[in-house]
Image (cartoon, rainbow, N blue to C red):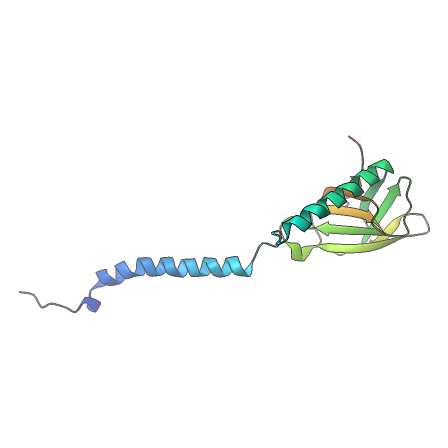
Length: 161
């Protein structure tokens, strides 16, 4: 006959307990990460957001009616915007929106220089793909597009296909 050992001295009960405990631990870590990095694109008041979309579409139609076009370029640490069309606003608002991380979004208020172009300082190291929204101040019209920022990057907004 063999001596019977207590259950806690056998490896098999510990192995069988380790499997469900590891699942519980992994679930806790997943829940923590989901809570910590909540998706900023989900909106609580979707009805108000839907109404705002309709207003934004009106601004797009207004830009088209005015024949608004813009050429954006980056040169020597400066963002330069040449604006064509029937409206010459005293200022432009440029909004760069990161596709997945709202905390990286940027916004500039640009005034025209002596040559009629709008310009602003451009931060170093900004790269990747961005959603671009250019609008007049006050917001009567807007132009939108996607821009992949690279050295000597250029973007044309409002061009008809």
